[in-house]
Length: 77
Image 1 (spheres, rainbow, N blue to C red):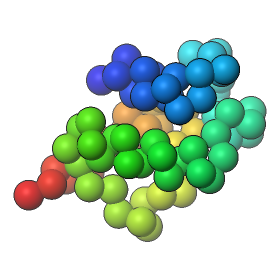
Image 2 (cartoon, helix red, strand yellow; image 1 turned 120 degrees about the vertical axis):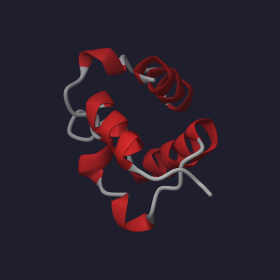
Image 3 (cartoon, rainbow, N blue to C red; image 1 turned 45 degrees about the vertical axis):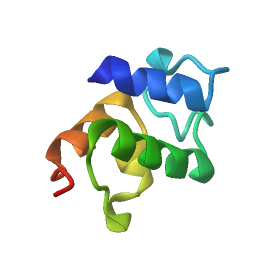
Image 4 (spheres, one colour; image 1 turned 135 degrees about the horizontal axis):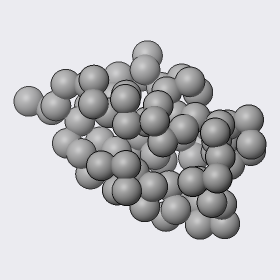
């Protein structure tokens, strides 16, 4: 799963090495538009529904936080 998330991130912002960052937001790798794109890609690729209230920087600032957010969300019925 983490590899798939990493590939999505690389598709969104190919100029960055997401494996070298501990915080994508603080390191300037993702902005708000990128997060919206990431949410859409996660929903499509993992068949999950991400509630708008869960779209906060802390949930998308690292591979681990994205994975955790994905794992704890219910799948689309």
